[in-house]
Image 1 (spheres, rainbow, N blue to C red):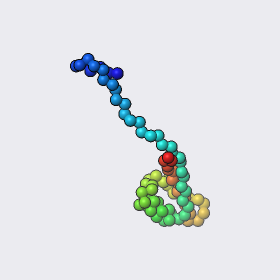
Image 2: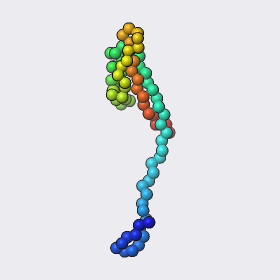
Image 3: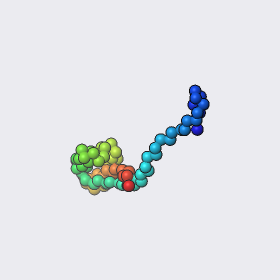
Image 4: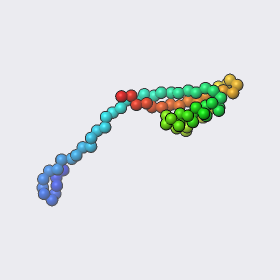
Length: 79
């Protein structure tokens, strides 16, 4: 407790309200396709406010002709 020096009375310390704790789980999305298909899909997911384009790793070759892959890791709140 704090004491108000001007009146000599005790002043209780106000504690901020605690926010509820949320559980988070990790979800990993993997896209396979041509570079154009991946770019279009990433742009669509961005337009839908699901993921930022910079959240995806740079497309990586898969070893198959004209195929690349990109990965997105998201932390999803689970109530």
